[in-house]
Length: 332
Image (tube, rainbow, N blue to C red):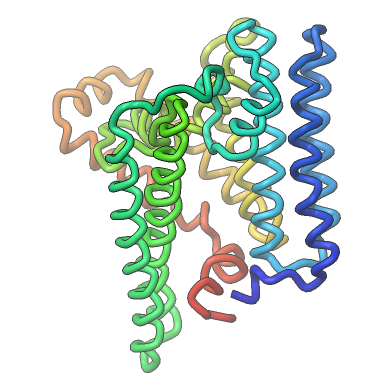
């Protein structure tokens, strides 16, 4: 876990203190009436914020750098998205609603907070139950990954790392994406926000379009749609806007995965470009589209192959070594 303990504590505190400052600055940006000025301001905050965070944490360990960069990315992209929504006249939040949406929620739909606080929403308990269950299951997998690493001391190093990683990555995802995020959803539903899970049974996806559009990390797809796809769709067309959405996703994952470890550049970007091409293939190859639609098993196999086979280029070895394996005490 040393990868997540800052070497320079005062510097780390200053870096973290910049997050609420950016958040409050974003509130005023969403109030700018000029479309051009509001968009330019929101994107400048995002670009400058990420660049400054990267430079300011350059001497910190990879895990801490990853969390800091992801934090500033999340906050600044909230500003970009909320600016687009406010310019369209769909939602304008009060200061407290803005703090709740931008600072304490992972989704990208500010309209969900426009009536908070109010009476609790329905089915809140189910989100807590799912969150606790997935958190526990993920914890079991993380401990299993640690146990496998210790128990396989006589194995070849590559085999030990493979087994531990296969257990660890799903474990972390279950704890965070399906555990903590569902608990957070439940908390906001108590306060009256129409929040929902941002991960909807991705294992049921029968196409890449379904996986990225309706099941996996809806917060990210909402952000890409609002910040990139919709502004580009009108002047540039659907195909260009779609590809630029995946290019943008690739850039963000480079910032979150490659930049913290300062290695592996280009591989996460390639992963998302490939998936953009895959979705175009689905939409243009009508025989394939009909096949995966009529035969769910084939659709699931098709989707799983696209997700899993190139996964090593998304989570490349420098990232695993710097940010993932240290979670269970593997230091290489």
